[in-house]
Image (cartoon, rainbow, N blue to C red; front, side, top):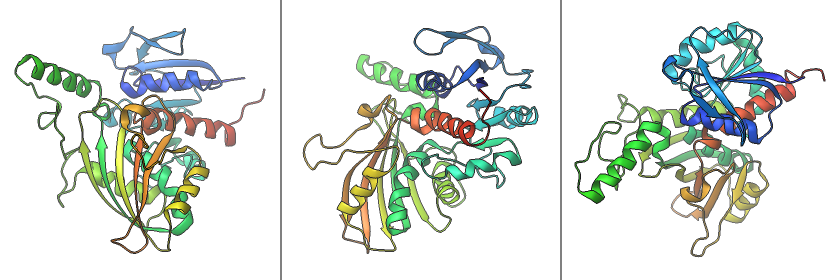
Length: 341
């Protein structure tokens, strides 16, 4: 007997990737429905190599009898409809930022804190972290276990797909416009995105940081350890898919590059590609469509006591969103909602 699954926001970048991931991993579902706004009703979305689903309306959808809903429709929509689904007995795995920092909602990366999933019963909602946080904490976990991280300084290089399909279209259109000498149109970003980098993701806060940078700090503390200090600079770069991060760590105890490399190689969800030669590392272009978080450029930082620097790359639409959500759902049914055969 399989599960009944709803995918909310099914026509967006993450929603489509969730459907692909469910099919690829052969999630044990007897029924999968695709839901979105009324503007998308009747459209078809792919589900696996040979199936399509017709999109239904989220407004008014009855979640009664559904086991799991994977949400990625935007924070304001999740704020309205996720509690409605949860009240109907459907466990929500929400990709938006709306519930992440609520104390009675678990914030989960399965390779890092799978035990937190058990807290779903308080509200029938589990939050998926920010894409840049997910790939970072997957790497921090084995290193924290090894030598206890005190401080993280991270600079991100985040692709435009993290801002949605319209952002990807804007990068494409601006790039084309430059080559044919057309005017540059700017709607999704605060400055020209093509052939540029923008150190501004989400709104500015009172202390000068952006909300994206704040998310990386507080989400890491909630998922991994509240004592870890995080300083982030989040930058949008003209890449379609794939986030990269340059991470500098300070530990409580001594750590060598060799010990860090060994710990990372043994950890789930990580692929270590770390050769000190040309092409001996992974870039965003090469991680697209891959499940792993890739780590390279592992080296001791001699400017700080017990310091280490590294380079981390992952597909933000897969591990940074869809795959992490599906992994949560898999652990949920494995440990908490098994059905009789």
